[in-house]
Length: 304
Length: 264
Image (cartoon, rainbow over all chains, first blue to last red; front, side):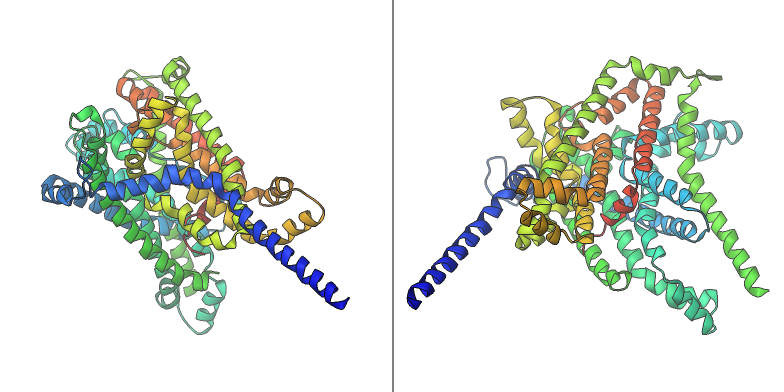
């Protein structure tokens, strides 16, 4: 009698475990639609770019396309320009954006100004692209606001002739326009997290404002600042829309080269080259984002 | 006395920084207003702004972009949100892989993604449909990092496990548990994810232009080649539209910041 009770108990326990096991497996069905979407439109495309860089037009594995791309000075100089523009605008954006974040965070205003600034920065940093091109054409382009003013008053200054806007310098100026707001968005929480207690502690120990910044403020903010600068670098490195709508002739940066290798308008469609250049871009962004997340890990120690 | 001098100095610096940066950010916007209201050399008028509605191609492109935004929000609400919540509740083992996949688009520039999806879209346009609305699928990938971050922030802020258990105990179905209990609790995260998605879709140019679909941004660039002042007017209008979207919906921008931290 006792035995049967025991048996039925273990039996039901087993059945329970079996059901739980089954329920555990059926839970995986819930992620199927998402997995299909991810596979078709994210994982497969990424795989095809990475692997495609090593394939020739017959589909055989080869390094020849990568080698010939590396041998072409046009690709190398475009890549250098892309790195240059990204570095310059990351530095300008990081410094100006951080100062702006400091100015907004420490000025005693009500939440309204802050909220407006945050929303405006969100628009400029994330929506930008084509609209920024037209904003700068209206400012520094032919018949632009600044151009007309300078053409009247200082006809010999470079601002009177808009050629510079359509080159590397122009790209740096326009890109900074979305980098500064992005830096502001990323860096404002960091500045907000500077504890007033630290300032008080520094003051009560006889430290001056300068000493506070030199010994507390700047060391504490540095990892976060560098991380944000890396993020800006990746951001302008990946940018395409602004450059494409601003510069109609010549592929001075790698994203423009990719698009001309991809579209038939230029005559020579070269999907294999597009994949090689894309792989180079992915590698840069992955390195930068890895450094970024390593830095963030240091930051999160005191920020949370 | 000395303290006062110093804080005065700091104040002056703060003013200078605010003035310089605001000027740099506002000047192009003011120039847009100036440019779009110029008629001929010396006249002012709203010609360019009135002309917007008389551009049938532009209007249909704007409608396409708005439809795309709605479909992408739909995909986010009915595919991404349930999946993220489901993994959070029931499949903790998949949480880390899910996070990595959701952040992957940050490492893949749009111009690179388009190289990868070009073949798939060629196949789709030959065998299924040429409708630009199919772009919604790849757009959903683009917005993934942003929606994921705002969702996971919202999920971590409340104890969804207890809520899910409670709704289970009270006899709710899985559907009811997800959409009746958990999703409303993380409303703010879902909301900001949706708003960022709308902004990104309306501003997207790279993928649509290279796949030859006529979305709003593609059409604005085309228009810019024939009539720059209308293009500038439309650009300013869309900047203002998205700005209002961000201002009206609260907590959006503060969430937008969180999305940029790639680790927890």
